[in-house]
Length: 610
Image (cartoon, rainbow, N blue to C red; front, side, top):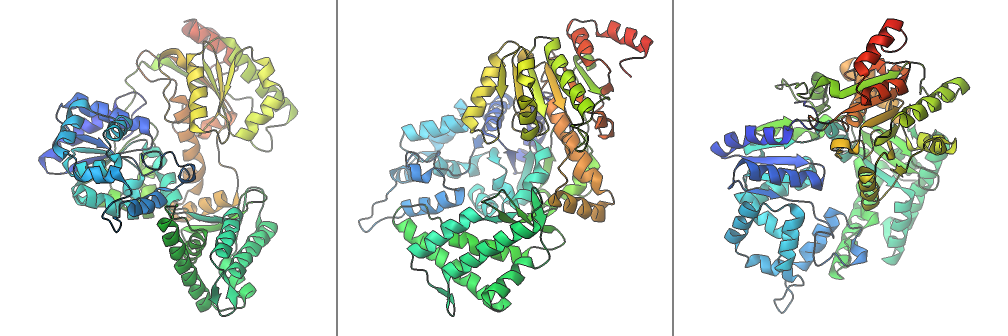
């Protein structure tokens, strides 16, 4: 289902699925990407019916554990590592005592009382965790015990789409997938998410830590006279060689059986010996995990990660995986990347039913085909907001095509157009760049100095707290300008109600860079669908553009202008922008209420809107 931003997809999907699910003994599992979305689900369930039990569960982390939160060493722990360490904390010692009193208290917790608290107070995940900690109870373990009682379970994507976690999740809920109704929010993200969960990589930094780990635990023989550090050193040599011979700009395609052949040649062993070495490294990694757990340390093993990666690499299907060398100088990585998301989309086919929804799913036939979903019901909802509230324009005189963007006349017109549009009216404005590199280039060429406004930034690698601080300061500003990236965190999932964003300037089309991975993806979809360019270039770019423009209109009273600077926009499906020769003048006319007169005048002259 595609329906525009702010049209009520959340409440509608819950009202549509809950009665059927409850009548047939099923559960609704609502999958989200962010914590803020989970809060909304809890609020909507409260509005539907007072006694609907909605339990919002989050993945394990040191932040959500009262016992681990203040330990700086544990802050980097993965959910899997935290889970393994947690199991150690829950064990009883020789005196019958546990290291974790929070888990002890779960065993004696009054579940009926906690169920009543959630039903009546509709606690979000953070509020629930705070209440549990105040009463000395582990929030994660208590949530697990409440899942069988829930009518709606709100959970992150991994609970359903990562098989190992799904197995546990089904046990906790007491409900098989066949009696589960899945609701997937922001589902335009799902294909890329499913590709990522089926992808593995190994970098030089991880190998350096594996070498340190091997020496710390005795550097045992892996095969005949080959030490563990010898194996690690050879893998490092192979990665350096791959970076030197195959890396071009961002990545490089590796030949078939590259890693296997290099390992056998450099170690002087057979393929059977390589498998035995991997098994020996797995056993070593398990030993390290156990020793670290016994010392109440994160059960992290870099040698175990190396073994898992080598096994994964050797088993990857050459039809659906592409094997690459990626990364920057000093931390090159081997990557085996999954091009087909449908392999991890099995839960969509195994559940009772599923609702996948977003403001930017179209074209729906191609979306369903990408996920391997056969013959779905499809619904496209047009916006119920007044059409005139959003004006979408594009400049057909400039291009951000890679080999033309910095041509003198094109780049001058681009800079002048962006500056003129931003300065045309004093409203909160977001400038969406196609990449951080382009943002930095235009800043270096004086873009900031030409804008007479306060500027806020989304920077590469910003911590979430820092990003949200910049975001909130921009929303509170009067006529501020936010520099961000199309397809970045600002352009998806964050709300700009009322006048907190009224003008969006989109520089270029976020087409993927022509990397080895992108070319492999295009060839794969050429083979699978006959039109790889549509699936890997046009549709992803269109969705990113529409997500960015969707920040403008969140309610029936919101108004805004999206100005796109790239003449290639006409090739994108579903963007529907109008060509304009004088975008700053059109922006001024829109916000002064004279857009109708402006259109009539310019059309008569034949110089502006087409």
